[in-house]
Amino acid sequence: MSTNTPSKFRYHTAQSAPKEAKPSIQKSIDCFGFLPNLHAIMAEAPSMLASYHALWDLFGESSLSPLEQQVVLMAANFENDCHYCVPGHSYIMTASGMPADVIESLRNGTPITDSKLESLRTFSIALIQKRGHVGDNAVRAFIAAGYSERQALEVIVGLAMKLLSNYTNAIAHTELDEPVKNFAWTKPVDD
Image 1 (cartoon, helix red, strand yellow):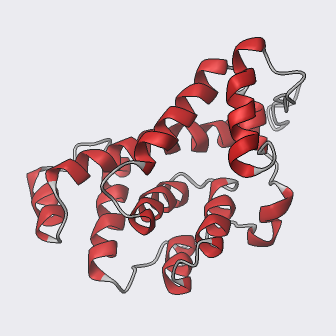
Image 2: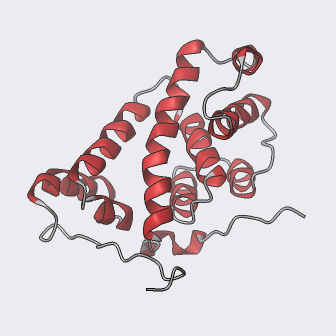
């Protein structure tokens, strides 16, 4: 096998998924109206799909607004070069009526004009790049921008969720779902 040939991960269905994954598969279908390809792949490891759902739900219950949650998730998607999640969250943000300029900034990895959201984006990126070791000054700057210590910890919940999805998509080369194909994305190259 050539080292350039991608691995072939199985896209499970509700019928082919391991028994332990079936409740999570049904939850995915109930939530999205179809089984996202990411979830179909994650079903191979039932604990992974269940963990992903749990983190999704918990992050959704955080004190960060839905827009702020998406900023965290999209910052991770961009930093982790996730060809699958950037389109998926672009679709979610667009369907939710979130600001087009914020979506564009997140897709391009450029600063958001809203300074508070920008501090959230840069804090999220720093956590990823420095593997959590951002230093006290970064935490103080995040709090000075209007966030709390609680929210600093909640950002980590969102990043943990994205680690599961972004890394899965990287090794599985997950195909885009039909509803998000119009949001296909390739990471911009620095000039």
